Image 1: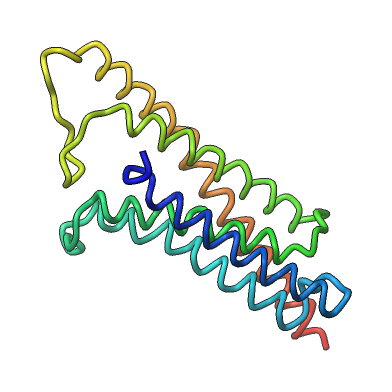
Image 2 (image 1 turned 30 degrees about the vertical axis):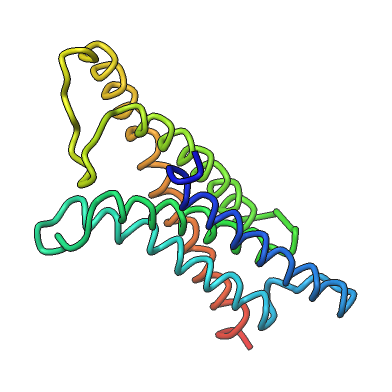
Length: 184
């Protein structure tokens, strides 16, 4: 059981360490790091970079012949790890304030993470090789067909929400830069 979910355990452990460091900072300074200050920005930027990695690296490996290095299963594990840790860091970046565009972006982030867990569950129902290729067996044709339909349905929901999330995130970043630096 542990071996099949190693990326989730690493992500969970990383989030625990980050939460511990965040909690220590709050305890030490007696204040929650503001999203617009150095630590808040650093957490948000690192989290967003991990989220960009989540969105781009696995998709590039999956869809282009130029980026054909490494096993698909390894890239999926990286995708899952960065897809959990990045959003957690972005959540810490919010300073627990969820209003305006930043609040909408956070809501989309939560939805996409939940959708990712659903997709991972559906994905694991399809038997695959280590390279991520589907294994078709005569014993499970009905189950395989149903899992493929669920995966296609999941893609029609997950991908547009991901696009909306990144459009919203880029609008938030642009607005934050504009109002905090360019107007001063």
